[in-house]
Amino acid sequence: MSAEEILEILKNKFPNFSFSFDNSLPLESFLNVDALQLPEVCTFLRDDEKLQFDNLMNLSGVDDNNAKKEKDENGNEKLVGRTLSVYYHLESMKLNHKLNLKVSVAIENPEVESVESIWKSADWHEREAFDMFGIKFLNHPNLIRILMPYDWEDGSYPLRKDFETPEFYNGMKIPY
Image (cartoon, rainbow, N blue to C red):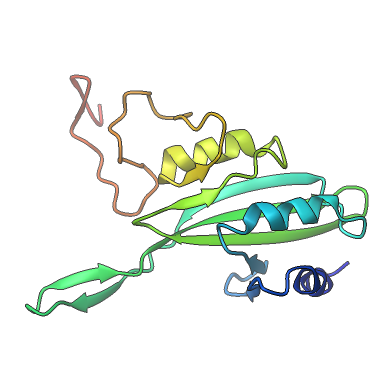
């Protein structure tokens, strides 16, 4: 089944939801889904007999680095509109088709509903996206750091484009 056919099924099932394809990447297209509607859409993608997406192959966080410069009333430049995104690669092993989803959220409030209860493989992927980008997965049962030390500075996410490596960590000079 093609991504366009899956889109039509989703539009019929969720007529009040907004879906669109993002074809900006060269090799794959992604279906944009609202962050708060994600669990309902994903549950349907998993449970519908025609779709049966039984495997979350991958989930990745991305800093879109897409802020635009604007001047305030005093003429000072500020950055606005920056987003973080989560990319989901789904597969139906029974029906042999795939679908990619994308959810984008403002960097000031990077909250996305967790899909851990739908696909258990999301547990570790969501922890990694939280740890590296600061994306908060709502209703995740144990959203803690997975790669960085537990005492790493809160609000410091190494894969964000504006991350600056601290000079010291626990008295050790970084880099060595």
